[in-house]
Length: 76
Ligand code: SF4
Ligand code: SF4
Image 1 (cartoon, rainbow, N blue to C red):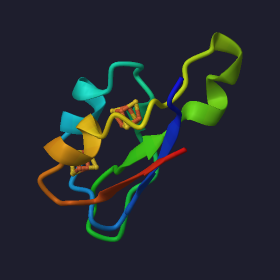
Image 2: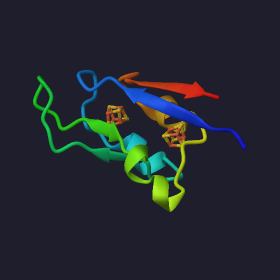
Image 3: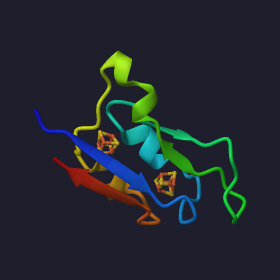
Image 4: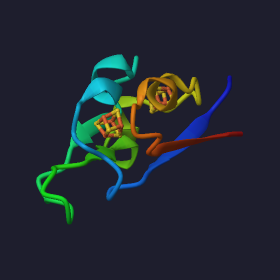
């Protein structure tokens, strides 16, 4: 089964939440910490969900929908 991971550039994110809505495994949430532009950026929360078996598949949907090109996807 394909696996992946993502990195989100917290300073590019404008908290539009599109990536949060599109991730099929709900692996992205809004941070409770503001970035330098005053937005609460999206964060990848997979490490908190390991026990639930929710794992990034590297599908790339989050990166494709991000209008700020803030998400990099890595596939393994
Ligand atoms: S690559 Fe796919 S599974 Fe991984 S975080 Fe993005 S939308 Fe979710
Ligand atoms: S889609 Fe991009 S800009 Fe919007 S919340 Fe996600 S990372 Fe931030």
